[in-house]
Image 1 (cartoon, rainbow, N blue to C red):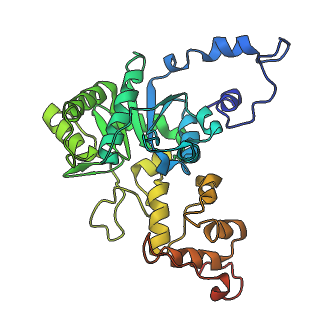
Image 2: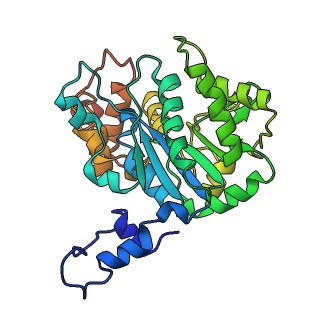
Image 3: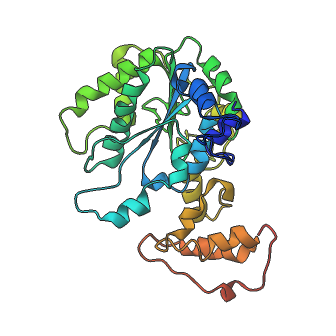
Length: 341
């Protein structure tokens, strides 16, 4: 876990007075910070690669804060939103805000890729971060975690590593034909073998081919690696199949140990299936600045007031489709009510 000084360096707590001032009575001063923090990646046994894109932007603060609290070396590999036909407004709207940049130790931006954003984006995000990981021989374990998947109990990270045991990798969820990439723990040697194997397929682009999960399970089988299947997986409500997106806040192994949540999936499921939305602490205020989504009209009002009329308005707004939304006036929902109904 992090000391208060480490939290200040990460922007989790306010830093305070400028240590670069000439007054060396300020402690810690510039020299203190240099001696203690300039070699941060050399002082840990694990790296966490947070793979992200602008669709995660409103969840990224919560995710990076929780991952930084593990005390492991944190890399955010952020898919750049800028394309040749973009303008400056796209950059401002879809890049993380400046304070979020403090939360990760290092940032990676891959080259611009086109089409199949999940297939191309996730792989190249990880491939670029792989180069950083391999610069530090002290790193023995590598996590990949999606940018909308915060951990409520980051102090459990070493217990999760211990659960891996002699196996090569362990995903948050897995079944006979899928090892899901929302969150995975690898031994570093296995991580390198898998990403190198995937690279051979990505050198010659074939549109529409191979999801990350498809290539991952093929690599594991081809390379003869050992997967640790967690004792408890997130299951669909009927209990008959694995819910790889943990959409219903289910209890499962990663959730029990590190408090893993998939807030992006929880959110989309809640507003469509008329369920309670994730807690406001996981959703950045920048989400409500986007007038396109209109969530500042109903969901933000619900978070601010507890008035469930606004939640019903949000549910109705998401009932039809992404392209034919209906936003009814609040009066349609009767008098103010804050009970769970």
